[in-house]
Amino acid sequence: MAKPAVSGKLKAQPRLTVEVARLFPLQGEWTEADYLALPETNYIVELSEGELIMPPPPSVAHQTISARLFSTLYSFVRDRDLGTVLCAPTGVRLWPGKIREPDILFVAREHADRIKEDMIYGAPDLVVEILSSGTEETDHREKSNEYEQAGVSEYWIIDPEASNITVYALTEGAQARGRV
Image (cartoon, rainbow, N blue to C red):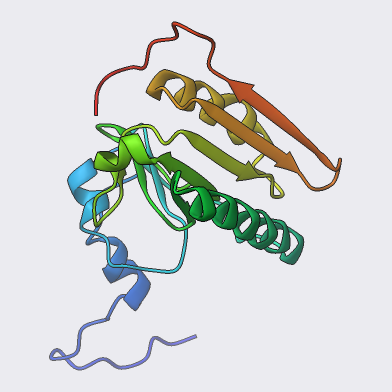
């Protein structure tokens, strides 16, 4: 097959997605500044070990559980003036270069200074993750360790398929990583 004739003035144009991808760092080379420069979206995007992580979109069951739990926690906390309850996508900077976006989080009134306009800086008092297809390993191992290192007092993992909640709680004397 003959090549199409191309004028010397025309140049092959790469696809738009390739051009856009060139504007961003390679996986493993993302910095916190790169992460913070991302445009606002309705998608959950996390930063971990120099990689940008986009978990799969939540299912309807996931969102139903999230909405019900958020509503219950929000009402309980508001009625008692205990602090702030937020839901994804709200960034939580556990330490430099480690930003997660839990499904639901609670920050006690005495830790309100951790809440800034762009995200939470430091450990929330409670973090809730609802398992989605493909997030089990990350939620049970990586995030559990990270939340413990950051000093999150309680971490709940809700498994919709098994209809159970796993609760991790810091024991007295546990030390946070301390790098906020």
